[in-house]
Image (tube, rainbow, N blue to C red; front, side, top):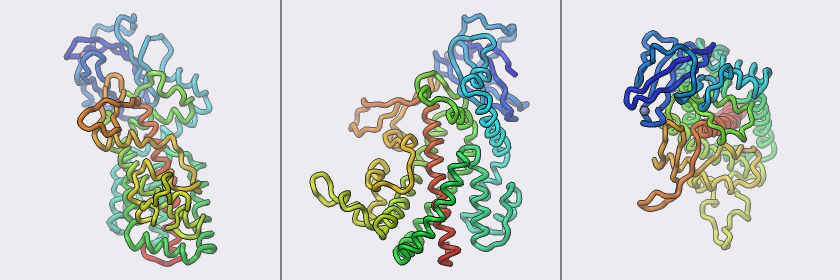
Length: 421
Ligand SMILES: [Zn+2]
């Protein structure tokens, strides 16, 4: 179903024609900025107090656009199209034409999962907090309310199993199921292999990352990212589309997101990058263990710079952990776990982390300045909000993938080594 409306901005008087395609989400908030004055219009469907802010609706409008005003197609579930109005060419039709009916069905299934998930937000946040606090009484109660996650016993392995069911519930619409189950089974095989072939050093690695709290802290920080993701279902849901569509068009066509703003999401990318960077330390340790039988042993040619100087950061895993995200990847030789390089953009991460970016809401373009330029700000890069969200989604998948390897490490500690985690 589609609704056509015409709005007039309170500030500058600009009129805009809107066609709004309905999603199955019960509450549907929309927002977008004026191309002239950057002021925002927002309104909510499905809520009695969803008042219109920033504009007034033209009452005498009769439902046929004649092309004199700018036009926008709005839909919560898909990229939004701005441009010329074409009667009948709704967002839904555009989408099903582009990706086909079968892909649409799959996409729709994931969107419906998301619709079921976001009303559970409070429980999903609580279950993580309670696990981190080891508050088992409340953890048990909350788990009972999350489908499939009920706690069998308070044995550590059952607690971990319930916890990972909860994170799997939270991440399922956002991730690729086949990929998850593959990593999950390969990762536990890996720890069994390490236990057999590098027994002493495998145990030493685990002892190190348990003893200094690295694994626990990393695991906790990783867990916190899940409820945050669910809370951002609105901007993320329209990026699912690019799991089916050709992403070559992602930056070229004016596909935009109609809700949420950049500041809200930019911190999330920064948090993901931070956790991912520490996960790379964990991966590097494992990679060293697999390839050279010791988590501290980096590949010998990498230990020297081009000028044949010793790289102090590769003396041990501990020193490696201080390396910047941007340089870490090149120092892990032929990593056993394949990392999706499309997810990582260290320039973008730096631009955000140093608060050197500008976001223009009307065009949804982010300009970021990653270089150290003293007091000036000249050299910039641009990314559309949709590309940015897509990158965040891919980075979340990387973090989630490595979380499966961390899960295998935790089960190895609990079941084989009988250690406290
Ligand atoms: Zn305006």
